Image 1 (cartoon, rainbow, N blue to C red):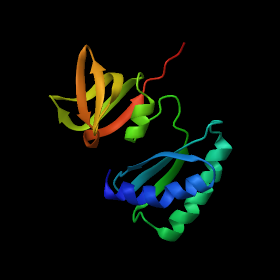
Image 2: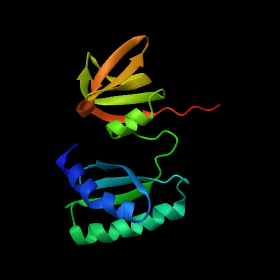
Image 3: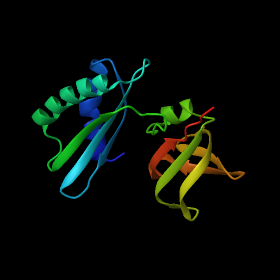
Length: 152
């Protein structure tokens, strides 16, 4: 996790949790002069638009006072949704047995994209089964992981 993300996590997660939600994860996507700060929130009863609005108002106030982002940005508060992104080893552990799509920051064994069955965690590696081949992907190499929703 980059130092900017760690700083944002330390600043915003306590606010989200004080409002009664889980801070599922934070993405900061730098897009030149205008960036995107996306905060995912979760709750056992699910997330409604009103929940996102409530959290967004509180986070906007904190961000205005603390001013951790020097460039223009858009704040977006969202539910993780059905194709929820995974950010932490604990989240990976909780979703063992799910189909996932993983994108790496740089190539590993000649590829950056993996889609398969999340088998587990070994120390700091995510274990994924792709076409009968098991890969151990270091968590710090992972750019993005999403659950592939199942419709039954």
